[in-house]
Structures are given as C-alpha cells and as structure tokens.
Image (cartoon, rainbow, N blue to C red; front, side, top):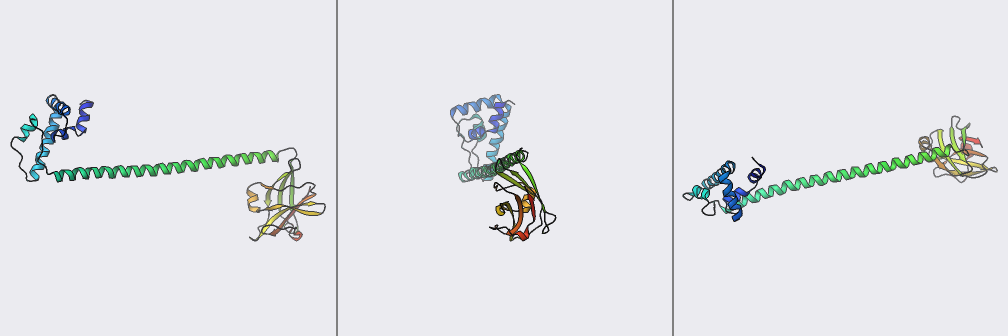
Length: 252
C-alpha cells in the first residue's frame, strides 16, 4: 500500500464521503479510488456496514437499496442515525482529545520547569565553584608572595595546645588567619585577634575558630605590630583585650 492510500485510510475522508460531507472534487477522488483500489473499496464497504448497523441498533429502517445507492453514489448519503447520538459521539471524542492534549501540555510544562530549575541550579553551582576557585588562587598567591610572613601563634598557660597561623604582609597591608587548634568556647563567647603596637592591644577583628579551621579568614592589618595575640572575648568582640584569656601569641 502506497503512502497516499495509507493517508486516506487514516483520515476521515471516507467517513465524510459516506455522510455526504465532501466537496465534488473529494467525491470524484473517492469514486475513482473505489474503482481502482481494493483497499479503498473494502474500507468503504466496512464503514457503510457500520452505518447500517448503527441504524439497526436504533430500530430504524434502512431505506431500500441504500447499499447500492451508496456504492453508486447516486445521491448524497444521509445515514439514518439520530443527530443527537452522532453529536454526542463527536463531542465525547473531542472532549477526550482535549483532555489528553491538556494532560500532555501540563506534563510538558512541568518537565520544562523542572529542567529550567535544574539548569539554574547547575549554573549557580558552576558560578560558585568558579568564585571559590578564584578565591583559592588569590589566597595561594598571597601566601606564597615574597613579602608574606607566616606567623605561628602558639599556646599559653590558658590554652597550652592552641596553634593559629597568621599570614602577615606589610607590603599589601593584609593578613589571613587559619586555625590549627583552639579550644571550643561557649556560644556567648568569641575569639578575637589583637596586634600589640607600642604596648597597646589593637583589635584586628573577631573570628569563629571552627570556620577558620576550614578556610583562610581575612583579618584587619595594622602597621608596626610587635606581636599578634588571640583572646577569648564576649560575643561581638571587645574594645580591650582580656589578657587573662590569652590563648595564643607570637612576636613578629
């Protein structure tokens, strides 16, 4: 069977022909195909028989010679099927198609939304990874700069096992802090870094010792520091160092 015949059989052309709802050009085409194509002739026979069966089910009498007249197509066919039944069938069919199409559309929209959300999440993850990589590269370059001095703050009698590393760079006037070990402290306390300048403790900022174990933390820088010191202070920091809680220190 060629592609044209398959397309006709899959369309509603033959049904409309039997219902008398075709143009003269379509009618002539169907008559020619019926004459030359056994497949088309068989399909017409089956559909015409179906129409007759519907009429019988509705207890309607098929006009004498209906089959011969349909086959000869002497007049436009008007199958004796109640219009209400036919309308109901087409409405139900149309409603089913709309329901299926609506379901497919909703599924497609949900899938598109999911894919867009995934793409957004992946984009954000890549951007974050790129930012982290850039940050790591800058910190690595800072640590390895010729003017960067690693200052290792060691423990005191208050916290003998403490160790903090501060990367101190007078040229760039910057420093990074990394905790190797500091004791845990209460939630209402914080660690604070100080620079001893001419005998006076100047604050370089507070830090979370657990976060500083995972990454390098930038701290403030002050010129002419003679030593670096870490103390335990109230949450939020203090304006003067609590010397009694001195946890780590080093002269620089």
